[in-house]
Length: 597
Image (cartoon, rainbow, N blue to C red; front, top):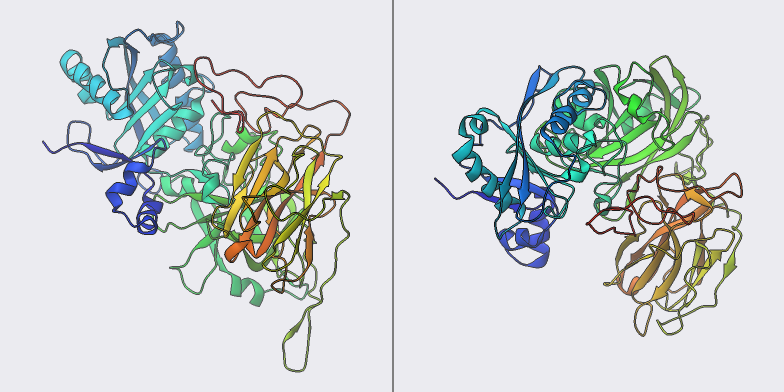
C-alpha cells in the first residue's frame, strides 16, 4: 500500500506562499500548523468516495462510526458515555447533530451510525494523524466489521490530548473532537463540512479566516447553518439570477437604481443573486443573499443575533465549482433601512471600491427588497445614503466633476508628533484611536488622535505590526485600536495596539479611509467619523510613506451598566469586559486576545 500522507495546509495559499519564500511547496506545507488537513494521498480502507454531495441536494446519509478514546493516563470526562454521544450525534432530539444537519440541508441529509468505546490506548505520538493510526489499528483488530462498514470516522479524545477543539480532513471523512465540546452540534457541522471540502468562512481578509460567524464554517460554537456559497457547494441552494456591475448601472431607472428581490436562503432553494465584478464569468464575483430568521427558515438559528439576523449579505468567493476549496469572504451585512457601499476585497490587505452601493429597502414576506445603485462622488462607506437620483455633473469634455467635502472632525485629543520608538506614546489605554497624521519626508513623523470617552480593558490587549514598511494590520474582531507606535529609530515600520472596549462595541464591518498624504511628503490628517473608531491601518509604499486608517461604527452602551461581550463575540473564555469571565477552558489554555480556548 502507498504511504498515507496528510499535510496541514491551505491549498489556496500554498503555492504563492512557497514562491514568495523561495522554497518548495513541500517545505512550505511543513510550516503550516493550522488545524485543517488536506488529503494529498490516501490509500487504504477509509478512502471510499470523495465524500461530496451531489449538487442538487439528493438525499445522503452521514454513515459514521464514533469512537471515544482514553489515552494513557488521560481519561475522558465522566459524562462522555456511549449514550451521551449517541444522543449528541445520532438522535433526532433538538440540537443534536442529526437535527441540525437535517434542518440545514432542507431535510436531505440524515446521520446514522454506531458509537464504540471507550477504548484504551497509549502511544508516544499524539499528533492527529498518529492518533488516527492508533485508533485504526485498534479497530481493525477488535471491531473490523463495524469500522469498515462506516464511511465517516469520528473520534473523541480527552481535552488535553487534542491540540484543537476539532479537526477535519478536507475530503477523506475523518474528524477529531475534544470531549469537552461534543455538546456543540455546529462543531460537527464544521468538521464534517471539511470532509465535504468546504473551506473556512472568513470576513474580508484572509487574516480573519474564521471570523464570519453567520456560517457554520466560522468559529465555534453558536448554532447556525452554512452561508449561501457553502449551501450552493453542497447542493442545498441555487443561484436565482445573475447581474453585472455594467448591467446594474445601465439598467438603472430614472431614480438611479435597480430594485432586486432577494428570496431568503433559509426558505427558498433559488435564492442567491450572483454579481459579476469583471467583464467575463472567469472573474471573481460577489453573491447577495438574505438571512431571514422566521420560524420557517433554517436561518432561524441566527434569530436575536445583532450582527446577522435578518440582514442581506454580500460574500466574495474565488471558486467556480462545487468542489472549489477557497475561503468565502463576508464583505457586508446590512440591516433593513440601511445603505452601504459594496466594498470587495483582494483577500490580503485592500478593500476594493466597486462603484456600487446597496440599500436594504424593506422585507416582503420571506424576501428582501434591495436597491442597487451607483455610489456618489466622494461618498464613503460610513456616509452612504439611500439610493437616490444621481447628482453627478459633467464638464464639456465628458469627465466627471468631483468635489471633496471635509467631514466634521471627531472628538478626541491629538498627541504630539513622534518619529521613533523612543518618542512614541507610552500610555496605550487612554481610549480609542480615531485619527492619524503625517508630517515630513516619507511620513517621517506621526501623530494620533485618541477619544478618551471610550474606555478600554487592560486585559487581553494585542499588538500587531508592519515589519516591511508596506502592509495591512488589524485588531481582532471586537477590539478597537488604542495607539500607534513606531518600531526602532524611525517610523518606517508601525505597531498597532488594540484592546477590548468597556463601554460599547464595534457594530459594523470595517471600511477604509483614503491614504494620506495625497501628495508624498506633505502634511496631512485623516480621521474616522464621529460615531466610529479605528480598528486597523495600512501602510503604502516603502517606509510607510503613506498611511490609511480602517474604521468601523462604534455603539456606546445605552446605560451606565457594563454589558458583557461574551455572547455577541461568541467568546468561550477570558475577561468579559465587566469584571467577570466568559468561561474557562479546563485543562486547556485561554487565548485572552480572542476569547478562545
